[in-house]
Length: 296
Ligand SMILES: [Zn+2]
Image 1 (cartoon, rainbow, N blue to C red):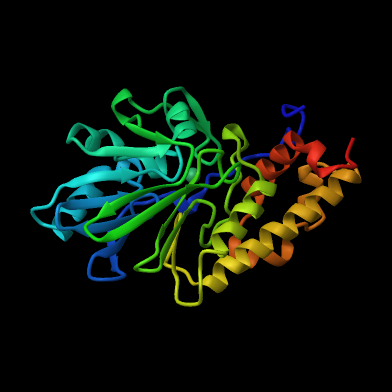
Image 2 (cartoon, rainbow, N blue to C red; image 1 turned 180 degrees about the vertical axis):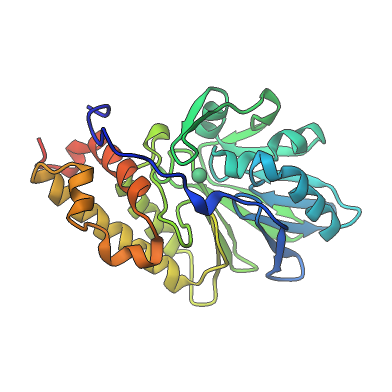
C-alpha cells in the first residue's frame, strides 16, 4: 500500500536544512543560548559543571559547532546531549561528544533507528550513523537533566515528526525546544519511515502549545526563535492539512492531484514548497487509514 501511495512524486531537496557559513549564537538568558547554522538548531545550557546540549547539528557541521560551543563556554565540557530525533541534522555531534565522555540521551526508538541504515527523504540519500553515535541513555518516558539549577525536562511526543521525538522544556527559563515538529520557512515533515505522521504531529503540537504562554521562547528545528503565536499557527496549519488530505483521500485523490488542486496553497507563502511535506504526509496518512476512516 505504501509503495503505491504517492508513487511518481519527485522529492525535492529540503533547502532549509542545507547549512554552511558561520555558526550563529543567540543568547536567551545568561546560561541558555541557541546555535544556528549547524544543520538543525542546537540549544546549549551552561551550568557550573559543564554544558548540556539539546541536539548537535549535522555531521558535516559538527566540528564548527563544537568549536563555537567551546568558545561560548570556555573551560567547560559538554556533559550531556539530548537528541530530539534520529535525523542526521540533530545527531551529527553524537559520535564526537560520546567519545569525549558525554552522555547521549534519546528516545529508545531513536537508538534503534541510529543502529540501522535509514533513508532520509529530504536528503534523498541513505544514512547510517557510526556505532559511536548511538545514544547511551534511552527513554520511553518523561525525564529531567540538570544543568546546575536549571531543569531540562524532556518528554516523548508519540508518533509525530518521528515516533522517537522528544520535546524539551526549560520551565525556569521558559524555553521550549520543539525539534523538527516545528520548522520555520519550510513545512515540518512527518517522517513515515520512522513512525511519524500528520495526525500525530497535530496532537504533539497541541501538547507543546499547552506548555507555553505568551512569554515562552520556542526553538524550532530550523530557523529563528519563535513565539507562542507561531507554534499556534503551525498547529492550525497541521490540523487543517490533516483534514484536507483526509477529505481528498476519501474522494480517491493522490498526493500529486491534491497538490494540483492547491491543497496547501494558502500556507505555501509561510512554509514554502509543499512537495516533500505532501509526499510524506500522504504516505503517513495511508499507514493510519483506519484512524482516518471512510477512505477504504
Ligand atoms: Zn528530524
